[in-house]
Image (cartoon, rainbow, N blue to C red; front, top):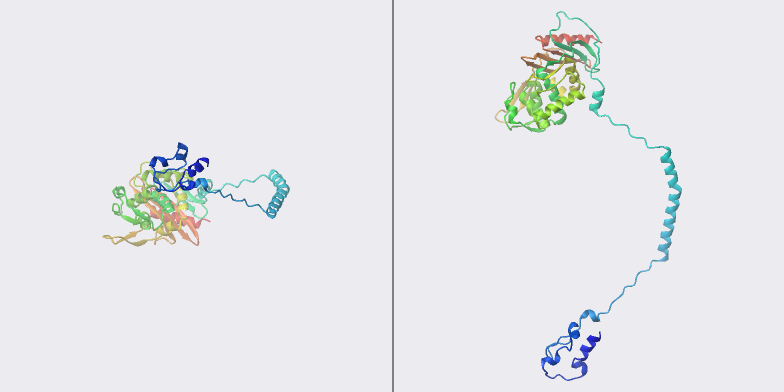
Length: 373
């Protein structure tokens, strides 16, 4: 401030002097201190002496608001009340927790675990009735689908190729993961599988329910491959799922190397395992609806427009109460048939493998099942 005042006193008006023209050097700030304060004048009358605004600006101090006594009193009372509650309640909670330790929740059992721990079929067979002529199948069984009771059996654990009855497992897995209205794109590899094929076109987009009809009624191998890849992403991944599910269900006589059963090598099961698997498959209402249908007209995109599927099960419409399930045939597997019929609310399942007279023997086994209490 001393420098500023000194600079102001040097101004002509501050000293009462008149305005006279002098040399510019006479109005130059007298020392470096004045220059730092901003007092610069080049000639008389050019501009007034300037003082930085921040130097003379008064500082306004704000007064703090004092907290009223009522607010302080209310906070003190609230703190005291909290302290009393904690003092009285905390020991009781601690002692209660120590006296009664928390009980762990019982482990949840999934459907797969229940199906694995509980056997799907129970034996031995209720009857050893001899047939005349004898049943020609290399492996056969009759079970009560409702209870899983084995009613009659002939070499039920004999491992045999099972041809297209493999599609029971294929349909069971795919139905769990694909909705009926899902659009499925046909992979080119599906159109090159061995016969039987229904004629799917590469990259064709088809509703899943149409593929299920073709799988279980027409028994199309291209339907099986398409559904397998749509379900698991690849044929190999789907085969892994098929064998994993077989282990979960306790199917100890089964191994799958084909999604359709067209390849016999290392693709096998037994009459016992197929009957157990059929019990599981029949729990799905969509599966039951398809396998009991004799004929269906399916609308299709151009240039096909419509397909007609005729169920290959020879018992449908020719045996009272017949409602499923699946046929199969290859050169090595022979004729295979998984048959079911329902009368009076009771469902019987009969399985015959490698049987040249499969439809006739399946009828006789179903009759035995209904006769056996």
